[in-house]
Length: 556
Image (cartoon, rainbow, N blue to C red; front, side, top):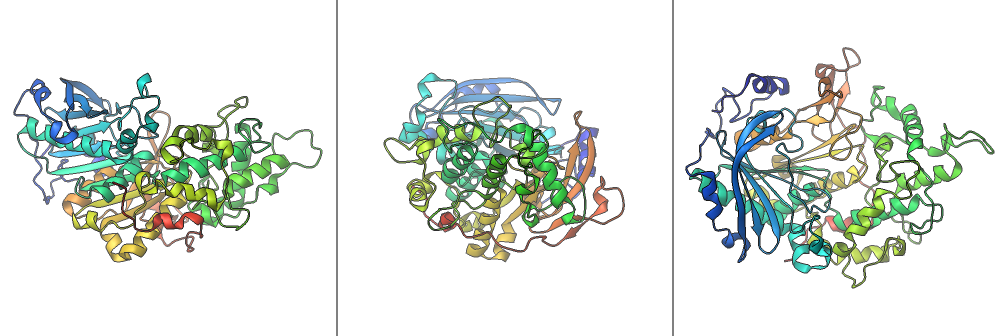
């Protein structure tokens, strides 16, 4: 077994779980001892990757050196190269600490660069990560933001495929081949961790390549890619313009009003979950109306209230778009109450004087990926109706990862941990709930619980940030579930200060259960909370794109 540094042993005690292969004395289902390399790092430069990527695939470097992992140096053999025609990859193989596991780290946004991270998201205090136990892989998914020649990559059919699903798959295959060559034996377990588009990539792998990974940690998935990066972000961008158009309109709602709006939400709804702690356990039970803080007619000082125009914008952002003719919703869900402090940079500008919002940039970057039109519609040409949404079905099976039939992945022994923050400013957590509902309808509750667990995290923004206990270790939970059949259940979450010190802890339970304050004891201690049933018992409202969550065959 890996011999951990004292600080790592302490992490196990803190999280209250024994981690297979990470210093636990308990017997494990797998004997994953440390394995050393059988060849020099430089020898990996000659490994032939053409059987994976095709002719032209090549390794450009294989270099040994130390890298910091949570402040501790770990020696890696880092291999970089290209899988034909243009998928850039990086694989880091631990020289002295490899514990027979591979972990691919997903890429966010539209990718275009290779992650420099040595610690995946949601691995807060994970002993196995901190000890350098994983071979780590990452990819640019077929294009480079730094290369001017790739500026028009979204118009190239092969690069669209590489981004949609192929880039992650071939990089993972390359990591496995390099692992075999370096250590003289195949890996025992393979994992994936990703958030945002990385979450989409994880679900895409489960749906298209069910044997690629034994365990997948999926955060805030952009799996409704076509709708997310067109109608939802488009609505946010245009709703915050005085004339409804990005090209000629002026920004209405600005960042200075976000504390005003959130304070009012908290005043109205914070105590509904039984605790006033500046975090909403489930925003769906909140019925706040922005009109309650509208400024008085003719008010000269509007700094502590919302003008009528600002109220209108806030209502539109919360509600999301509806088809004016049919009244049906065009998105599963929008921004949730309590997320207002995370809006700057997405729904509202970063500064008071900025003239644009991030939502419009996401639309502009993804238009040629989403629409099959020769000249994709511009943001100001979007129509918020059912007919326009139909355009998003053309490439649905290519870009989206919403297929609820995960039976092949389950049959292969795979496990999924799906998580989303209630304060997410980019992707609505209602999407994730809707997907969970679809998996349950398709596979049955018992089957679903056997391989997939979902967590909705109070106070977590998009993948990170937010106002709650937003640090957690899902890597440990996944390893234990996959290797020891210890089902993912209670997860410890932590709040940290600016120095990284833990200031509060709270348990997290599988959705729809929630952590409820016992009414006594220190609210910063995990022991002061108990598992409670759902606060909200309804289902996702009907919406036009509900069929996106029906089983489908992915586009070749």
